[in-house]
Length: 392
Ligand code: SDX
Image 1 (cartoon, rainbow, N blue to C red):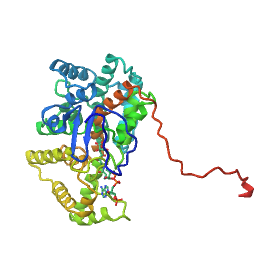
Image 2 (image 1 turned 135 degrees about the horizontal axis):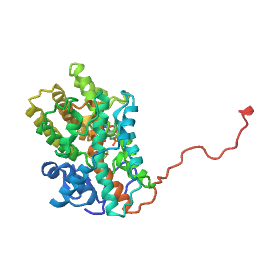
Image 3 (image 1 turned 45 degrees about the vertical axis):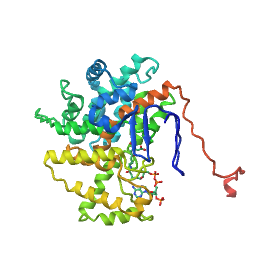
Image 4 (image 1 turned 120 degrees about the horizontal axis):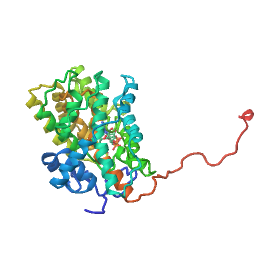
């Protein structure tokens, strides 16, 4: 329903806004991008089509779609000076820190203060960042792996090229795997937007000061990094690995997650809005099954994940708090099957979320929203007189 926001009793509404981009119903587990269900989009659209839909509000016609792909392809060259920044990072630098810096650095190579009221200028900035960001993602990965940087191959599809830029060997050897390309395309669609989550709210509030698009995206990447947010996909795999190393003792980790004196939480479970299954988790779980079966991969981590999920769904503590698997619970299993290391998982989340951040930034600027300035409830000292240090 338009214009009505119904919140759970006791919902912690940490600052809301009006938006026409993504609709969530936490009770019913519904997610729609510009009115289209996530289930239909994940099955029938490709990632750039969904990016166009989120940013410009309509699914592209064939002509618009072809032009969008071509214009993005034409923007997939990154200024050679950016390589100097990549080289300057220590190998141990966390990929999220690298990609946030590179994105912000793009500002100096591209006009960041885009004129949102000019369709042409906005379109140019959109294709520029969608063209360049996957190259920065691939370079971030290859820097970490000690591999020479690679531009991939502009003759192939957008998502195909992401995997090729990441995994092509220095001798040029590379074998494309359609199963993995389709799985990544689906994962990127499922991560593309999610209403006013922590990182999107960050992009909106930073952009509300009229900071440039690229700088606002860089801020969103930093917010996504946290293990309570996008960093959870890395934390899930680390948790599952720890359980595996602990003889698969899921009961021990369930007990830890319920122990109030223990800061441990079951990563990949719970959500501020979904008090039912995260619809994305259902699709990703099915995709994880299919990908591993198609690849003929037996991954004990998937079995541990399924066992943990079953226990949590039957556990009264979790049932009472309506804690279900979220988008991050199964995604890492697919990334792992692609050969992506855990500390790159959140970078892949940022790659998927990019169109949503752009769409939300553009919407906020087109609506001429004022600079973000949350108020507070002051709970500090009342007025008091200064005491010279000798008398304290
Ligand atoms: C994402 O907002 C979005 O849309 C985000 C996202 C997106 O697409 O942008 O969907 C992506 O960030 C998904 C969430 C990924 N994070 C995790 O998986 C980390 C583990 N989850 C939790 O930390 C937690 O569930 C949050 C952060 C996701 C939500 O936190 P809330 O809404 O603030 O929940 P809460 O802290 O108020 O918890 C309510 C109760 C508490 O117990 P009580 O004090 O009522 O006794 O549930 C408990 C919590 O202790 N609880 C958990 C738990 N999550 C909540 N207990 C154990 N394990 C958990 N994972």
